[in-house]
Amino acid sequence: MTYGVIIKKKSIGPKGSILVYYAAFEKSRLKELAGAFPEYQEWVDSINERIIDLNVPFRDFSYYHPKQLGSASLKQVLPVLTHLSYKDLEIGEGTTASLKFMEAAFSNISDAERQKIRTDLLTYCGQDTGGMIDILKKLQELVQ
Image (tube, rainbow, N blue to C red; front, top):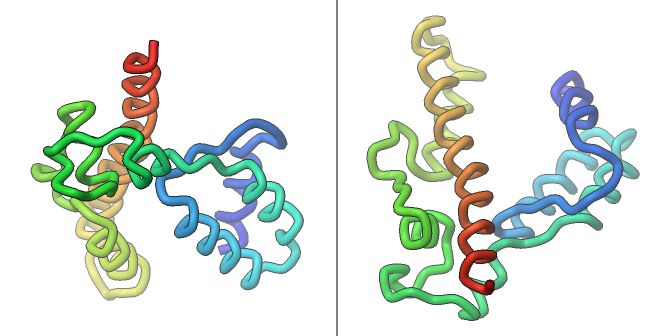
């Protein structure tokens, strides 16, 4: 686990904004990380200070489309602004992603099954990450 923390620490520069969707959740996970690895507390604090929540304009209804069905979740906002969808992905939401991660990490499954889960998780996480970029670009277009 510490190895993964070190790699991510090298991947995130010391300055600039860090865009997330639903900051409270992400900050909680980072605090849990610092609790498990106190040697990273200062780094985690520096990350938390730089977080920008892309959820805010949807949560406070600065932007709303009826197809969001009253929800500000990424799974509802992304298709409205980008026409991307989670419906055809093997893993299409966070609870399943967490369960599949646990299965791959701790279950006695074949290497092929583990690799499939890894590929599906990368696809799901890539859609979340790339989708946030697409949402940000679309919001920038709308305000110009």
